[in-house]
Image 1 (cartoon, helix red, strand yellow):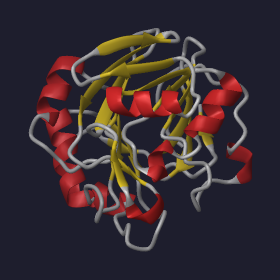
Image 2 (cartoon, one colour):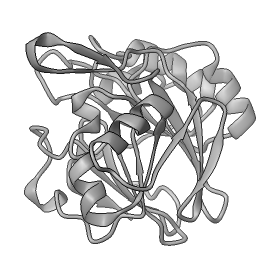
Image 3 (tube, rainbow, N blue to C red):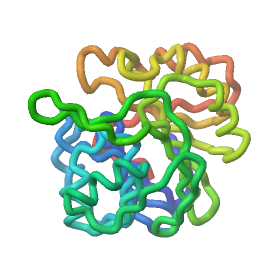
Image 4 (cartoon, rainbow, N blue to C red):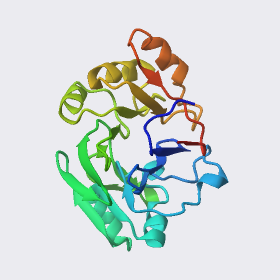
Length: 238
């Protein structure tokens, strides 16, 4: 398994969920839907949680956020409307922000960037509650290492701006298709971002999410030095 960065520990929880320990010791979770079909029992118990990032309001991304927030009392970072909704559910220490903003959370700097998707909670009787725009996050670690979690998104040309402004070294990109980018669009995203390390996500969870890391590799073979890092759910890359 490829090493990503000294001191960085990444565990894929399946779907778009990650548990990350940064080089400076911040324990961070992104979109922790722990009941997804790929998440093993061993990955559902966190030793600590300082920061919780939510890209948008769909249930397969908010997932277990409320329970984890009540257990660990982390800083919970989300777009303003989603943060307000979580506060109403009894979540403390929420940070409502918007795209282009940066907040200090734990020991890391978190910048919210654009994503092209939808975001809502579907309640009883199919009632839809708007929860703000979808987003992605750029996270700058204590030692300067920067990674980008794209959230659920299609490819969009302003990914080039994300690369130019924030210079992420690692991108976590959806590849499953149907609800997000497929490998064809993700291959364009890699070129726009200019990253050399990519972790695919949002695939394999359900049969319709058919994109694979091998497809992405085949479509990016011409990019010198690019690593497509295929994680297994519950396995930590150190």
